[in-house]
Amino acid sequence: GAVVSQHPSRVICKSGTSVKIECRSLDFQATTMFWYRQFPKQSLMLMATSNEGSKATYEQGVEKDKFLINHASLTLSTLTVTSAHPEDSSFYICSARDLGASGTGEQYFGPGTRLTVT
Amino acid sequence: AQKVTQAQTEISVVEKEDVTLDCVYETRDTTYYLFWYKQPPSGELVFLIRRNSFDEQNEISGRYSWNFQKSTSSFNFTITASQVVDSAVYFCALTFYGGATNKLIFGTGTLLAVQP
Image (cartoon, rainbow over all chains, first blue to last red; front, side, top):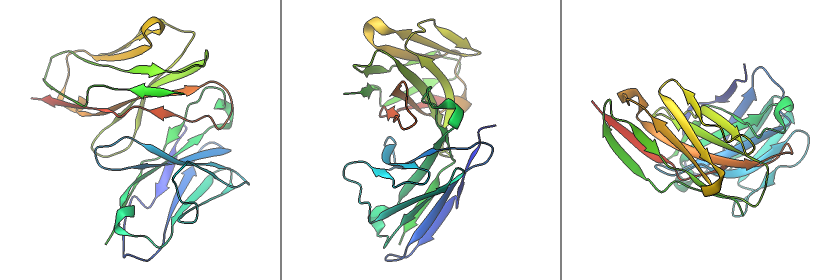
């Protein structure tokens, strides 16, 4: 149980185009999903917290107009990188919190999406 | 403020050696959770353990053991008889109790290389 999927696992796009990454909780409902970014040899940096049916909460320094997050259902959140540039190349990881685990802080992580912008 | 410090950036050991990964945390909350995750080269985070602040008992799971000491705000992780498959980046993380949107605060990670 508690499986989170991400699609695509790898994507290469040209500078100036937009890329959408999907995060799905496969066997549980998640009111809250999180999006992280990880540069090579660095830790995970929280980008935003996504709540189903409401606007995402972005961390300081993260451009909300560049990283569009939509959490339309209890099992799906999407991150769209708009007008991507080479500096957006990174490993993007989502996580989801089970409705039943709201007190424990446990998050289930997706396998990540490696974005390369050329 | 909450903070997690993993002072060891990289550790290299030879197979079958024991190795301890250090984690020191800071928080003003009295109720919190601590985690360890493994990130192999594939990138996917693997959950290893969750410990709440009220449970200071050490835990052992196979070759893995964890030492939680509130007095020193540490939550160290020991791998006994290390194997090549243990090579990965290990992250310690902290979150406070309660609320659906509480965030995980990650340490900077420790890269463990186990040589054959």
